[in-house]
Image 1: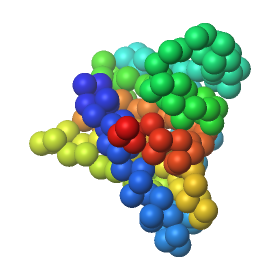
Image 2: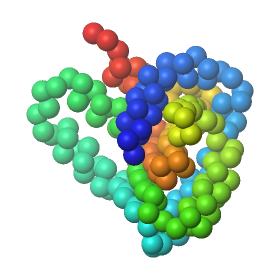
Image 3: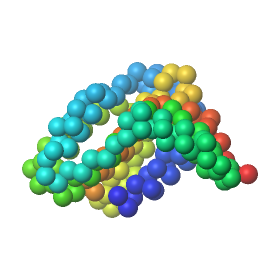
Image 4: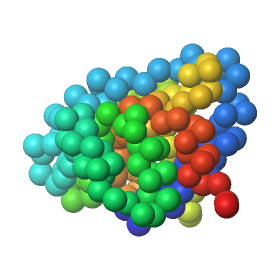
Amino acid sequence: MKGLSRVIALVILGVSILSGCAASSAIGNRRMNKTAVNNLVNRYSNKTGFEVTGVGSMGLSLLKMGAKMVDLGDVDTKKAIRVIDGLKSFRVVDYSDASEYNKNAFDRKVKRYLGNTNVLFEDRDGTDITRVYGIVPEDGGKIKDVVVYNPTESTLVCLFGSFDIDKIKDLISVD
């Protein structure tokens, strides 16, 4: 997951581009099969070599509430908390220790379920490819249901919810 932080930085830095592209008819028409992705993760979570970590809406609500109650003097930390305000759940899947058969089967299904979702960003570093999928509604004010998928490193990160583009821009703005 060494490249994951780089990919997340790319997502944040490229959000301003997305806000300009949101009027495109191709962006608003796509859908993510979130239920299918969650069901896939659930099916594979019991298989050898699959490590799944997740936090649901109740856990995130408690974390957000706790973070808001604690005196966070750092302005950037407060901005980051505002960015994840719309996050409803997240799941991280690391299947690097799975058998080749299970890795290939999982990868085929992930690609099929994400096939109708926009690729917001793609990062290539040699043979390492990371794709960031998500939905940008017609109004262009939010990004919904972001999935970071790296089949080379056998990782899948699902960030389900909505993220306000203006709050992300505020986070990455240079003062």
